[in-house]
Image (cartoon, rainbow, N blue to C red; front, side, top):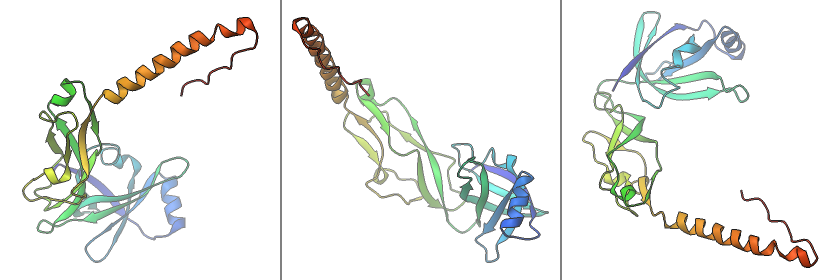
Length: 216
């Protein structure tokens, strides 16, 4: 798995007042846990552009005043109004200890069901997996070329050596739906339109025809 680096400084004090002061200076309060004693530090908000605002998953190498830690992003708190990051939690990882992460799903190939008129629906954009840091993938690649109409790929269908999937086995990752429902809906709309045109002639004999509600 790819690694990004992040530098921070130890917090002299913790608490709401100190956190507010840090945020006014564009610094984000952070905590690293998972190895007994928690490490409280802060870093500039721009440090999270590559980590947070991306569909990718990364291991994070954190440098806090010369001491380095390998970690994964665990939780992000956002301001309810501005949507700015106000706090970040990291979990320290170790080479020989398994850890879980959310890994993005990437599909390859052209589903045969889509070529036959179906519609591809991706139910899961990320999947929770657990494994040693050395075997965690950057992304989960799924070949959908043989996926026919009415068929799906579930968590139970995925098998990657060294990885444990933490989602329910029957959870659907991607499927191809029939387009028949879409065609029927279009036909019904067409019939309603024809009825409306015929009804438009009625007011000539007296009485205004009721106005149809706008389609949503």
